[in-house]
Image (cartoon, rainbow, N blue to C red):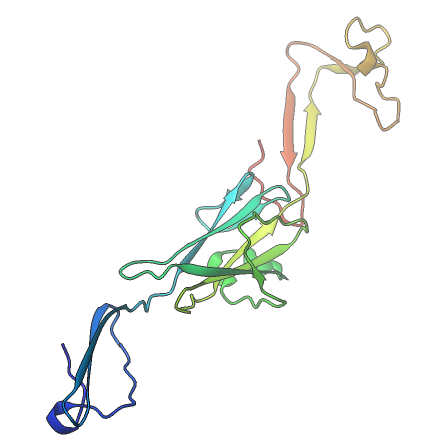
Length: 231
């Protein structure tokens, strides 16, 4: 190994400090000698960890990720999870993971590259191992990082996600031939047909059609954060 010292016989007069620049396992041998030649020796092993932790975000429950654009959508029931590990070759272990959420402009959710220029604000929260939820419809900047047991700090991760709480709007088109029906002579579904065209909150459309009448069902996902991909 390397020897320290510029004094007589390559020795270093105490006190002195030792630093390990390389990430590795180091065997440190210290020999102390007085003017009479009395000697004491100490050997210790030091594992140097210079690699910061790695933190990952994942969703459980309802979510959608556009693989082409990187856009992400979640709702108020989606669980947001963070997991961290301290990588090889000499992991000291993860000590803490920190998390922050900021509402940002819609454009930052267009893709994850644009998201990196978003600026978060507010206090950081220590991750306690429980999932997080988002209850406000907006574009959310989610930031997170971890610190290991020798204080190596990960660069802040930034990911943006839309929170979409607006349900799609259904649309039904009844083609021809058809005639309006008041439901009075119905044999089945009497509880439902009593609301045919009754102009109340329970109103339903009632038609008489034939086997050739086309009925088209569609829906649209409205603004402000439509995920689309309706089914």
